[in-house]
Every structure is written in structure tokens, then in C-alpha cells.
Amino acid sequence: MQTILSVFEKTCKDFPNKTAFVDRERESSFAETAVHAKRIASGLLGYGKQRAIAVMIDKSCNCIDCMLGALYANDYYVVVDVKSPKERIESILNTLKNPVIIADEKSEELAKEFKYDYPVLSYNALVSIEFDVDALQKVREEMIDLDIAYILFTSGSTGSPKGTVINHRSLISYVDWVTEEFGFDENTVFGSQTPLYFSMSVTDFYSTLKCGCTYNIIPKTLFSFPINMVNYLNDNRINTIYWVPTALSILSNWKVFDVEKPKYLHTVLFAGEVMPMKQLNYWMNSLDNVKFANLFGPTEATDICTFYVVDREFSDTDSLPIGRHCNNCNVFILKDDGTEATAGEEGELYIRSSFVASGYYNNPEKTNESFVQNPLNPYYPETVYKTGDLVKMNERGEILYISRTDFQIKRSGYRIELGEIEAAANGLVGIKGCACIYDKDSESIVLFYEGKKSDIDAVYEQVKKNVPVYMYPEKVLRIKELPKNANGKIDRLKLLEIFKSND
Image 1: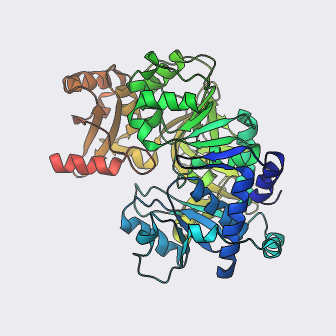
Image 2: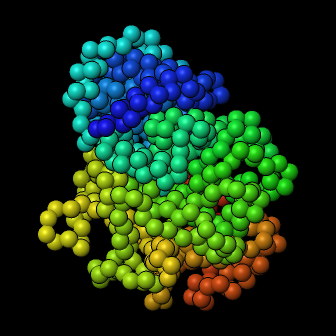
């Protein structure tokens, strides 16, 4: 199957009338989704092939129709967060050069605010078109597996957003692995948390296309009402979730399973940031017969490059392994001197796989920095991805995540991993979450935490027990709620702003 559309069409043939996608306003079968997508594609054909389609629609069945419609037209989609700052949206549109925008009634006015020659098409108008069978077939005959499927822009937490280009080959290769590894099938009901402009969404969305799962879009508001969230999981018979740790921690911090438990849940996957063991232990101790797995990988590897199915107990202050490489995805660790690390030695993680992206869209400089010739192979061209993640191998052969290279600092001659300080603080009773930043101007390590005001001294003492003296933070600050970016991750740039404004 050279494109993901072939995968989708097999599922449409096997399960035409099965509920595929669910949001607050609509349920869509596989057959209905395919019809809508083909109508949208027919409306896009007049704008040229392999063109960027900016989908400015909130996460919904309608948004999914547009994503697949772009693929049927042999275009590539970019889901745009309509709630992000206008400057960020403008940066994305500028990077794409001359995209076609699809908007709905809620976003059409916003889309027209950008004073460029971008065509702005109406979702309702596109799905009213009768699709052109012959024209769509001609387009399909020209498609190959190296054609772009979509572009995902990074969160921008470290600067301007970069558009990661994923082609059909990478997508099929990744989905083949994840569906086989976790046994997804037509009985899988996903409770989807992550936005469609975030790389984690690839796993449950495209697994649904391949296996005939049901993809239930969880309303964001439920994460503010944990009991209602559990009731929603039960009412919709959701049995598989793939959430960021911050979302999982909301339920554990509120001890919601002491009152109500999910009845159908059997698979809990998480990725995107470090999972605090205290919060995970609450899930594991509260729920029986549930598989828990830590998935790890950058957007540039489609979604995941390593994984660890939790198979033993960990204390609240331990760090969870990121495990071993996925099938058809090889990883290796290089030290600063360019040699391969052995067990216990720290180094940077590299990925070689068909999962790896084609590069960054319209950004050759950043592409050349990260998508590099394999340093271990001087004999023929072989591109690998240089992740910027610091890791090491333990005695069990499991990879341990340490930090990002941009979370690593040097002070007084010591190399310090901020993630290690966070792990030490997270184990304290009463701490709902924490994050560590470094302010270069004052040369201060600052630890933010959610919890009681009286715990400031206790947090500091907990850190002192678990890290060397040169890693002690200069400041421990209590915050009502750790700020999050659009992907649900902790916004460290915002924390730095808060520190500087209160310093």
C-alpha cells in the first residue's frame, strides 16, 4: 500500500457503517467520512497538486474530513490551531508560502483577517460538491509513497515554529508498528485527548483509519471535572487512551479513582513529557488489568521511536525508562566525542528509520542541522535524525531519558540536568506537578511547583536528599497552576517570564 489512503479504503470496505469518529455534534461512519473527504478533494483539485491545505477548524469530525480530503487531492494538510496567537498563525501561513485555507463558520472570519492572496474555502460548500470519480482516480494514479501527507508545526516553545514534513511512507511504516505492538483492532475505542496539530494525535487517529477503531474526541472541558471525565469514559465504553502526562496527572491529583473508576479501560499510553511516577503509581495501584506504556519520540519520527511497557514497580521518586526501539526503527547513543555510548554513559539519541521525517518545510538551514549523515556510516548517504535528547542505557538494556540538550546547563564546571531535579521534587507527597528552569541572567536554577504554600521548605529538603549540592535550586516557587502550551505541555518560557517579572 503506497499511500495511507489505500489503508483507509480497506477499512472503509471492511467496516463501512461502523462509527469511526465522534465529537460533541456528530458521529461519522467510515463510509460517510470517505464521501465527505472525496467531495472536499474534488473542490481542491482546481488549485494544483502537492499544495499546502491549511485546515483552520477545531478538532472535530469536520476537521478530519478536511485532512483526508487534502490527501485525496494529493495535497498535504496543516491543521492550524485557531486559538493560537495571530502572529503564530501568520508565521505558519508565511512559511507555507501560498496555502489554500479551509475554514468553517466559526473560523471563516479569522481566516479572512490575513491580508494575503490565500484562497479561503468554506467547509460547508466543499462537502456539498459532487465528487469527480475520474479526476480523483487520475490523481491517485500519480501518487507515490514519498508524497507529503501532512506538516506538523512544533509548539514553538524554543522559538519560531518549524514545520515537520511527514510523507506517506513514514506514516504507513509507523502505523504498521504501533497497531501491531498494541493490538489495536475494530474493538478499540480511543478516548482522544491531543490536538490534531500535535504529533501524538497521529497514533490514535491513523490507527483508527487502519484498524477500524472508534475515535472519540473528548471535550476539553471534561479535564476540569475529573468525575465527569470518568463518567464520559464509561458512557462511551472507551478502552484505550493516549494522553500527555499532564492530562493523566489531573485525575491522579484529584484522587478521582477513589470515587469512580473507568470500567472498560485496558490500555493507557502516554508521551510528550516526563511522566511523574507518583501520579502514575496512583493509576497503576487503582486500576486492575490495565497495560501502561511510556512512548517516546519527537515529531520528526512521525510520533515515537522507543517505548517501554511498564513491567515492574517503581518508587515515587524513580524515573520511568523510555525503553527500547520500535520495530523497523533503530536508535543509537553518541557521546560528545562522537563515539557510541556504552551502558551507563550519557549521550545524544539518534534515530535511523523510515519513521523519520523528510525534513522541515521551507527551512533548509534547520533541516541540515538536525537531519544529518549517520556519523557511524562513512560509506554511503544515510540520513538520521539528531534528536537533541540526552539519554543513557541502564543495566537492563533499557534507555533512560535524562533531559533535552537545551535543558542541560553547566555551572561551576558541573553538567546539570534540570529533569533530574524535577524527578526529585515530584516524589514529595502533596506536589501535584513541578518544572525546573534556568535563568541565565541571574545564573539561577528555579523550581516551580503546584501544592501547598507550606511545602516550599519540604520541597527544597526533598531535592537536597536526592541530588548533589551543585544541583540545589536557588529558588523554589509555588504556583497555582503550571502554565501549559497549546499541546498541553508545560510552557517553560512562560515560567521564565513569571520568574523575571517577580524577581
